[in-house]
Image (spheres, rainbow, N blue to C red):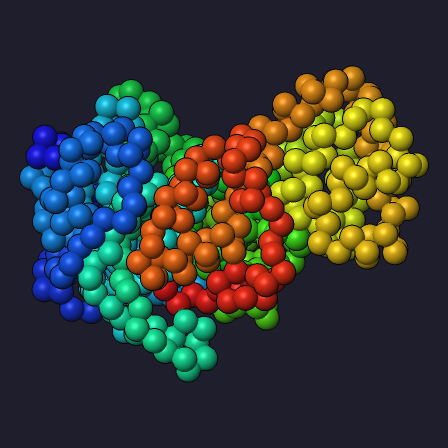
Length: 531
Ligand code: AMP
Ligand code: MG
């Protein structure tokens, strides 16, 4: 590990907090604070992502060695590492929250890699920082498992995300009131080493803007462009308003693309606050997220948001745009004019709409989106899937098996194929058979228009419709075992979710509908922000 090389551009190029003592405070005119991770008493590696580790430059011996958990829990810095916490702000649930910052994340520096460029290593749950406010800087095992498994699942689904390198127990325990209902208990702490080219968030720009720190704001924008959007720079030309706008436009496009992916696989982020929006358009901060079992655009896993449902499944694009609007406000001093920013915001809506339509067409196995009549098919399908409790993931996989010449009037025939995706088959049979049949009829006509064989169509559909996702109850089962010291289910899920689009005959049980016991269970269908 000592051969790994670090090039810490962020801390070398941006202003540091001049105070180096570790106590909570307002940090002004600085992008970060130097801080040491808390010492951990009994670091133990639970899981690692070997292929990713290799890409980052870690050898097999590195991962197996006793030094690895020491480094991955913050007890030991490798040569070239420097530890620091980022200063940022954000809107939480629509309200400006002021300074937030890395309250429990400690960055270790930027690893230089041959295939992935600069990659920042960050320990989440590594102790108090100047940004911890009233909290303890720790992360509990259950939330760390959820972050570790889900970020990797997203990566293998082809969705932009921060990565996870390792998951370690620290040896510490903390008290958490899991459901904020007065039932506090001791929980084991864990640390995920997460990795990204940049951990800048929308809120990283909002905070200096809110304080009138224009110099810092400009430096941050320029740093982001130089390090992560270098293609926007023109040789020999200084930064211009046009370059800033191109940067904002690309962030907008990446954000849109990310959310279209979420809608494709049924992922609900759960806390789309502006401090949880990556400037790279990566999915970041896996907290009370959830996966759609039964299709419901109105669903949110986050109990804190149960009433307003601000971050519900179907509202994510609108929130993405709202968040971009906050970022636009933040960088306004660099642009000086509202119109070009507004134009980019309008493009977001258009761009999202077009990409969503193309995505839906691909989910249904169409060659491409053909206009209004397709849109009508999508909308009527969404209505049906909502009305008849239907498992989204299973539905699309089974749809790929429908023969092109299916006789839709013979209900038993299509029910035999699609039946397993319905949670309440009797409801379908009692009231919606006709509606579903007529939708299928129109669907088959549309398929014939494209003229693909069933095999061709299934092959294309199975590349965009995953068979395996991190169902909420699967993560919860892995957590409950891990809390008893058995980490095998984490490793099994890691393996299965590495190939989410493949059939994997031996793991069929992991592609089944949510069992009834998990319908209203804490951790399976509802989660709080407690982590
Ligand atoms: P999140 O909801 O995880 O995005 O966190 C929002 C803010 O609270 C961020 O500034 C976090 O760093 C901070 N935070 C969350 N949990 C803790 C904790 N246990 N200790 C310190 N800060 C925390
Ligand atoms: Mg956060």
